Length: 303
Image (cartoon, rainbow, N blue to C red; front, side, top):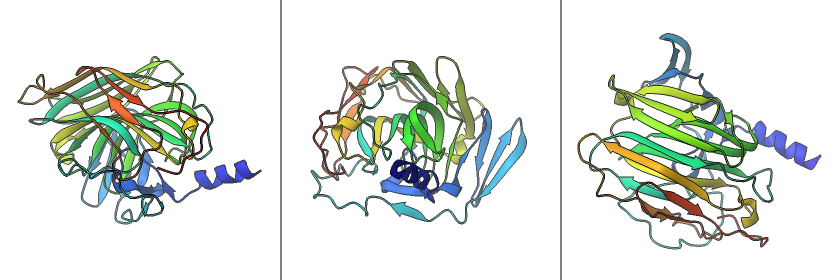
């Protein structure tokens, strides 16, 4: 009965956790929307228009979306483990570990594959994962993403299995495609491509399906930051992670002007709050990233 009531609270919460959100702030659920496969998203000053086959199917006013719930302020934790790199954009503490790259010029494509992890060892109904890749501009105002998801508390309601979707998240609104269910060990692929018509095509691909949308590049600005990331929400013990690691491979990145061949992914991790499960990222070449975490039965504090 307790689990059922907790789940009901999660599914009916006014606020939801979205991937890539800034500064640990949950968004109002009414301001995060699912869009159909193949939708075109147009972000205006006070509204967002969704089109399908050049026909308007939804118009969302954003004036009431400024309210957010600051999860970082709600956490009583130890002092910062180390000073944050001032040159990097700020990220919420749910970004546990990742690799990043700041391009020399505007990014025009990012692709990659990763393996669906195992079922989390000992799950809690509050646990929520987002594992995937993203692109952002220098001002950190918006992020395009291909994301695996596990758990409740997401805008879709969520469930305790793995699923994949394409995302765009701004300062107070978010849009995502349908969730594509995937299986442990399956290889998934993410593609974010700036098309010749000036639109970004964001496509999440499984072994049996795909989910995508487009958005005009004038509405995203020049995207210059690239990431491969593990986000984890609402954890009390390291054994709530999946067994093993999160493995990205066949990563590619293209810039508009400058080549990226001389650059490498930079491993990064949460620096504002302690990481008690030793989350960290490694890379051996430009084509790969691995996210690691410790697993144990030892209870930990929220991190």
